[in-house]
Length: 342
Image (cartoon, rainbow, N blue to C red; front, side):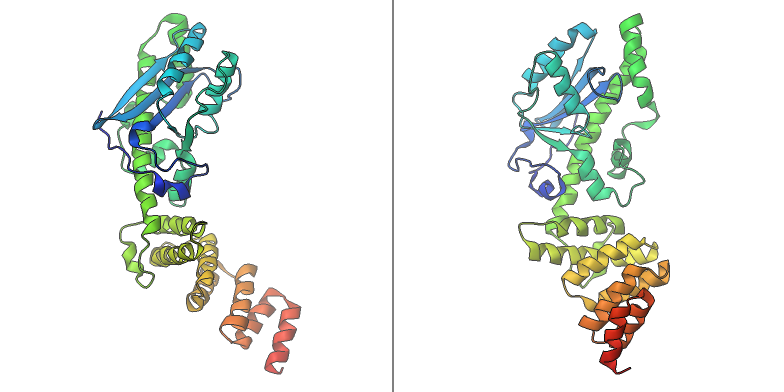
């Protein structure tokens, strides 16, 4: 099947929660997804179908390992380990907390310790949450696939809760129709992961190319929630803190028009205030505090921020006093009264 191979994974590094070999090439990336007899994990759960995919030539190749009977598990895991030996990175969706621990547990039970341990894990779920989680209703794989323009599933996809029964029907009664649907579902999961990986890599490149901070319109068609997410990610740059602060400010400024039109939640204003304080954009900070108070009512944090801002940055002790009184900060209020001679 045709699927664009991902470019260098370097842009993804700030988005991920685990280290990743940044120089890995597409032909050393293995996509992996399991179908199991349950979601509890542990020794009582079998991975009866393990789907793998990798880039070869101009397309994505798929290989599935199906467990015909529980007694064949050791052979399945051995074939999987042999196949995975030439890869360096395994890409999953929530695989770091489910798929990979389950396979390693099954490997231990089959006396195959450290199954797939040589592979660096790239879990797309945390990346999706960081890149799109402020906009989407949830970060289930199918939801993220739709958001990145991957609509290959349609109405044919088997519901997840029917998957274990489909395999037991095959093992106990030789029924294959539902199992074929499970195999199709597994392939679509792999295709979806490929699309999400490509979209996440492309979106992560924007971390190094923020819009001009003086031009909010330069955000273009990017949803304001996604610009907000990019601002949060830019804050975390340990390699170049000053550049990260500037990029975060540029992205949060780009999000402001959309946030104002959409009645953004208080946590957006809290993030925007923190980010813009770090680049000393005091006028915008003051405007955001006033807008948050107007939209969401009086809140202690806005009064505290405004009291500090007007006293120490904007040189307006009377306005600082008003916020200190609204906050109930008697010590700050007394100091401000003495300063203005009241």
